Length: 456
Ligand SMILES: [Zn+2]
Image (cartoon, rainbow, N blue to C red):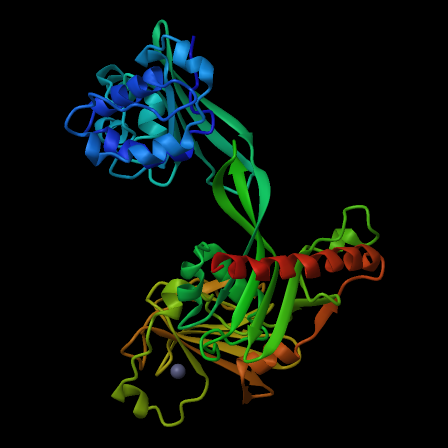
């Protein structure tokens, strides 16, 4: 019989197993305590050896609900099944991985070293969710690794299991399940400092910056005290979070002004839906997708923390028009709107530069590129990578020199983005949209309360 003593024992095991590895005696100590216990009263912890004062015994006694029946059961140590979860590291070897999980099983280690699936998908891979099932004697019973590397909506599951004939391994594919999470935060120094503070993944921070980029200049105008509430998806495999999904709705208060957004995809059967992609909308149904993006460099932890180094070289540039976006060499530079490449090559001062012509006599310029990835005459779509940031031409530090010209006159990129047309939700989809928007409003309120409860 395999008796699962701690059915919800993951937290308990996590809390205690750290001390288990160097104190092998301790496990038999707890087992002894359970057997000695008399159901109603306090457990007698006796003869546990010199290490007993170093282990968090108190946690165990508080967590385990001890049925009276256990006191009468002669429970050998081997029937305990213990669970632990962790994450793979790229430095993992068979031995270090098992040791970190509190398993000391040379036969299992040998299997991991030799098995093709384990070698390919487990050892030396980082960030894969691991759960382990171990017998009380610290032998491996079952190891499961889960990961999802693409947007297929599925995840991979590698199972390594003990059988009577030895260990076996198998690789499976299963569907991810989306769950919704709420979070909120307050800006004290930067967006990423605020999202770190509340444990939000970078991909959520990046999405927030992207969603509101038409209204908020995340590089220059964030203020201390700005706030955000966000509802986002986490994609899970077997209940383990494997990927951060899409931001479903968000609210950002910048300098006292509130901006709200929700993801909306018209249902497939709605008239005209074939032409309507999903996108972000204000809660009254205006698309946040504009004809022009406000920034040719996607906001990210790296680019946001990258300081602009002004150099005497720039002073010799008689009139410095345009906007400089500091970013490391190699950062993708993207076209801010649909258009056609009218120049892709080298010019004095600009170095490697791309000119793109858009509708309404609008032209954009991307200079100092380390690499150009488009050709003259090529059609490009909004967001396409047209080159990589560099420091060619009259620039000593890597940055993207960006210009917007309307009828040959310089324009502010953010103003261009704000003033460019946006597409409202179609009349056919509006009733569904309104229903969803009402829910979003209450979800965002719930998200706002997440932080409050954290500090209560
Ligand atoms: Zn410049």
